Image (cartoon, rainbow, N blue to C red; front, top):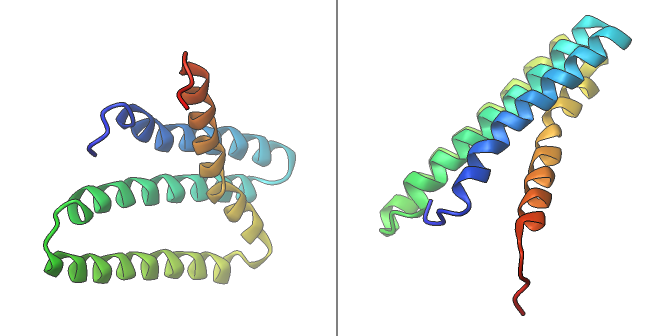
Length: 129
């Protein structure tokens, strides 16, 4: 990425997501059931992997420039979305009653991104207009 100040936060988001997924997965496994806890952790890991793959996608294709790379990037990104949908459909097929646990784990990436935004905003010493 071109923004050096952004790079540490972008590297931290997947780790924080997996950590939150592990904590929420353990809590869910203890309080509700172990399969739901595992699905929460699996959702967080899938979200972290998706974030890392999206970062590499942006670094590789969208900063290259030539028009023919855009077509290749659109095809690659469409295949990535198809793979994510197939993973979700497979998990929904096998764990119909526990799909909310997976969605809860997957949405933990939003909490990680929010934590990084708050961390960055707290570190700003001077606001510019």
